[in-house]
Image (tube, rainbow over all chains, first blue to last red; front, side, top):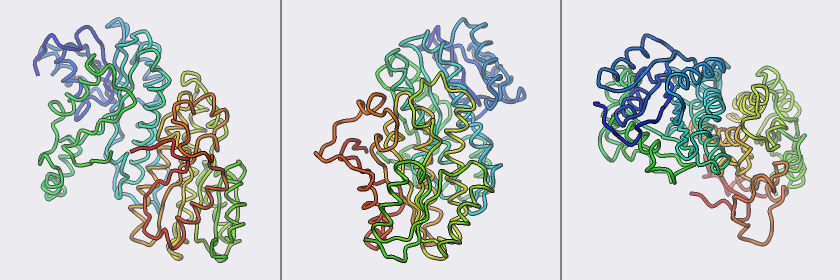
Amino acid sequence: MARTVGRLSGRTAIITGAGQGVGLGIATRLAAEGANVVIAARRAETGEPAAEGIRSEGGSAICVVTDVTRREDVQACVAETVRQFGGLEIMVHNAVAGAAAVHRLDDVGPGVWERLSRTAVWGSFYCAQIASPHLHAAGRRGRLIFITSPSGVEGSHTLPLYSPVKAAQRGLAKSLAREWGAAGITVNCIGPVAETPALVAAFQSNPQLRDRLAARTPLGRIGDAVLDIGAAAAFLASDDASYVTGQTLIVDGGHFMGF
Amino acid sequence: MMDPATRTIVTGADQPLGAAAAVGLRRRGAAVVPIDVAPMDRTAACARIDAAIAELGGLDVLVISGWYPPALQPRPFEMLDDADFEGIWERGMQGMLWSMQAAIPHLRESCGNIVVLVPTTGMSGGSQFGAAAATFEAQRILMKAAARQLGPDGIRVNAVAVAPELVLADAESAEVHYLAPSAIAQEASADDVCDIVAFVVGHTGRHLCGQTITIDGGRWLAP
């Protein structure tokens, strides 16, 4: 997606887990709207090509290898961002532990819990806390966005431990929206369904899944990471959404209509 | 009233809400073993549930309440360190998860119930309660996931969301001003919570599954 002089010109965004999938879609869209983007990816093998792809379209992007489960990694990522671009207005925490296997509450062990908890929830804690002084410096341009999931609202039958870690992000977002509101910072969540490498892999192992999911989605298709999810993130990151805070925007074609 | 044969464990009975729930459910006829807030360690958490089940001779109702005490105190988000966050988040979640896990086989035998008590703060958010609100909301949604997975086995899982001041220290100054005033004159007490728990686990509540019943006099009305 080619860069334009857009709503986010002159702003800098970190997107975690942006080496692929939803995170890359968001980074691509924010860059196209003019933001400097920092691809915070756990692996340079995905993060560097992602940043190069955005630069090749005329965007401004760097990759900083970051494991969001480590406080010092997030600190280093934020420090490098501020060093290169002079500030940080938009923090998007999207990273999630790799697709969890179906599990039963009867016997699921601490390992599954730890993987999900560390990436989604500890990652949210670190991203929010370490970005905080920079978001406060940005004032009314400060944005914190967590990528959660519809299953963090409705509860998942097959991935019961995935649901609470995604719910935790909503509870934290609402609280920070209240706590930071006086500074003009907005804090929101997006609950996406998009065609990502993880979902494509699921389609390959279960060919009926795509049709079944599409059939249960009023708009009849699976979301696009750039055009659908990236667009929602760009809206929340922009001045257009400066009066929107503490909300969860479900971007799933109408699959979940919970509110 | 509850059936006197209703074998019930109440966790978090070392805190006011859990203590009141244990006393109140016993007064309504249930056989109750109260235990303290669950530890984070899986083996220790399961052992405590196992011991209580042995004392009761089985299990019909598990009431989960109680949190790491610093969760209940307001604190600016920037001041939380990793130890605080681990206590609030990991202990709250793992304590609930492992307690539930130990109880599931016994609840399957009895077609029993799990009831999770949470303050409405998880749904409303609360300034200076960020880690706690994350935990409360995650507990509520783990309840929903458990309801979906365990329902086919005959286990019902629900939540009762209570007014923040029944749980949080200094809730009045830190958070409650975000909420509308109670729509009814009478504020709910911890003992009132027991009436709702008794209804949820009883025959008249037999179709409730994965629900959150809010008992705060009509302050948090969402969705």
